[in-house]
Image 1 (spheres, rainbow, N blue to C red):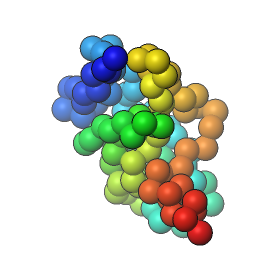
Image 2: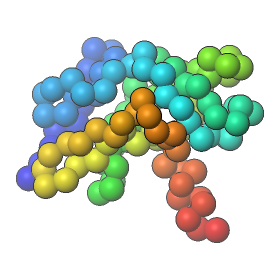
Image 3: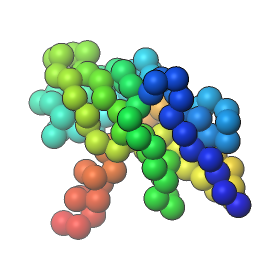
Length: 110
């Protein structure tokens, strides 16, 4: 069973099977020491540029900034949910600390 993932409205939304599921302007807590020097990054997503699914996570590449220190840029591919049995399940982004997928992969190789 396939799941359609698309970026809509000039990068403002992640659509899953033609339903808007993830929006920019959300405040995310990140564990992303490569992005800025804050212990935990208070990241405001400003626009999505790419979406991917790797068998484990649905991830967005997004640009934005840390509201604590002002650093801006792209922290990496951020997991926002997963697909199980052809159905999308979003992570509780308000209550978790997210980590870019490339950072998790590097930790697992050590």
